[in-house]
Image (cartoon, rainbow, N blue to C red; front, side, top):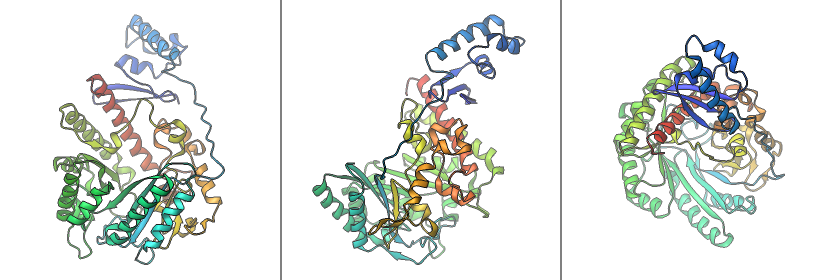
Length: 451
C-alpha cells in the first residue's frame, strides 16, 4: 500500500504514505487514485471514461505524474534502519509514589490504586535512588524525565517534595535537566500544593471525564459520592494559577458515554484549553468498548474534529491531543516506528523500587525487570520490547498509519493477545480515525492560511 485516500468534511484527501505528503484533490482525481500506478494512463481512462471527459482525465494524470516525479506520490518504500545501542539509555521514569488512591474509578487499570497488590507509599529513599538510577543509566543524555504517578501521588506529597529537592540538587551536580510531571485526580489539591506545583514548574496531567454525570458515574470517591465538583473546581484553580501552561486535562470515555465529543466540548467550554480523552481499554465489562461501537465512535470523532476546526478558525480554539499532528517532519521515522521506549528507555518504579516496562505493566508480575538497586536483571525482556516495533508486527507493516502510531500500546497488546507483536485491533481502528480527522484539520487550516 502506497497511498491512503479518504473523504471527510467536504474534502477528498490522498495521503502518500511513504513521503507523508497530503493532497487535497477533486472527485475525479480521487477516483483516479483507485487505479493509478504512475504508468497506466490508458487503463485509468478505460475505467473512468464513462464518468469523466477523457481530456480532463489526461490532464489530471499528467499532474499526478508530476507529483510522482517530485517524490510526493507513490513514493518508494522507506528503508529505515532501526539500530539500537548495545545498552539502552534510560530517558524517563514513572515513579509510583502512591499505590493507593482516594477515588474508586470503575475502569481503573491500577485496581483502584493497589495494582493488584498491597497499598503503600514510596519512601523518600526509594525516590532518591530512582533519581540516581536514571542519572547512572542515561549516559551522556542531558534531558531526563520523571513522572510522579499512582494511584494518587498527592497522597504522598512528602516524598514528591523530597524527590523534587533531590532532583534539583543532582541537576546542579551532574548537568542533567529534568522535566517533572505529576498525574493527579485533582481532588486533594490545596492552595499550598497548587503554589508548590506551579512554583516548581511541574507539568500536570489532570483527570476529568467531561460532563458531571459522566465523570461521577465512573470516578466516585471512596465513600461512593461523586468527585466531579472538587475535581473540576480545583483543576480550574491550578490551571488558572499557572496561566494555562504545562498541563493536560485528560479524560476517559466508555460505552456509557459514546457521545464523548460532548464531554470534550464541555471541558473546553469550562475554560480548559489543553485536552485529551482516551478510549477505555477493558475486557468483559459493561463499560468496555467493542467493535459494534465503532460507527458511533467514528461519527463522534468527526463531530469533534469539525467543531475543533470551527473554533480554531474563529480564534477561540482549544488543543486536543490526538489532533496535534505534524505533517511536515515531526519525529524522525525511526522514532515513529520504534514507539514509546517502554521496557528499555522508559520504566515504571514501584513503591518498593521494582522496575516494570511502564506504568500499565505494574502488577503483571511476569513483566518485572529488576529493581533500582540491582538494575535490569531480566536482560532478555528489554530486547523483546526493543524488537516489538512496527516493522516486526505483521499487522502493522502494511497499515497506512504505520508511520504515525508506532504500532500501538504494548500493554494493550499483551492484555488482549498476550503477544507484544499483535496490536489491539479496536485501538488501531480508533487511532486511524483520529489520524484522518487530524489530517483533515491540517488541510483545512492550510487552505484557510492558518496552518
